[in-house]
Length: 275
Image 1 (cartoon, rainbow, N blue to C red):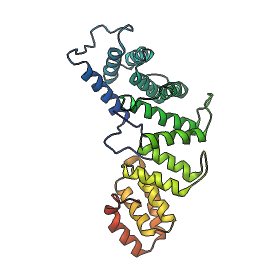
Image 2: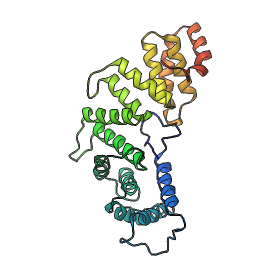
Image 3: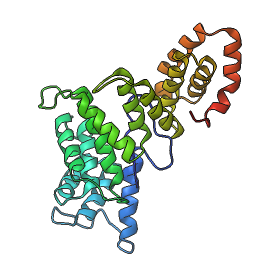
Image 4: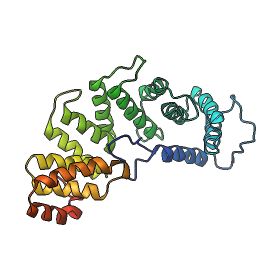
């Protein structure tokens, strides 16, 4: 079971890495599968002394029913008993101010605790661990005002590298490539950035496809670059269409008419191409 929390420039489109909501549902279904024959009743008298799985199930159902205060309390008790999914859910609620007062530093501490424990290969907690890495990378990249967490680009880059290389997460590969292109947290290296962008786009990351195409275009591979930019724009998530359209239109304004025509014709084919 695995997941990625989608941020900023791209969304996961692979079958193995899911949205936070889907990840939580997957964890719930995993728990239910492991407790078959013990149907959970929200009125069954779950208390803070209950087991972590029962508390997690109660918290999940309470959250789905809009009872977020009950969900937070259940997740807290389950988290104290070592339930990773509950800690992850609680961190997300703090990060979003969802059912609790928004507190990025509190979320950061929980994500850091999840990441510090590592994960066993094939563990059902893999998705939560990777999500924690990505969340920590984002916090280190931006910093948290009025907290001890300062901007640390080198640490952010290392966390993205861990998620990108060890777990093959397209979002991590994309963000790592952007940092490498910009020289954030280390040296700039266009060829290394292209490698990660290419992996991310083959993993279904539309934002990576757009940036990959833009890099190719700037290198003089006009037709291929335009083709990737056009294919990305044709498949862009609504929240990302504006910046992808800006990149594509800028490139189109420079290219000649023949290159534009060929690029548009090639766009449906380049999605499966490798560099």
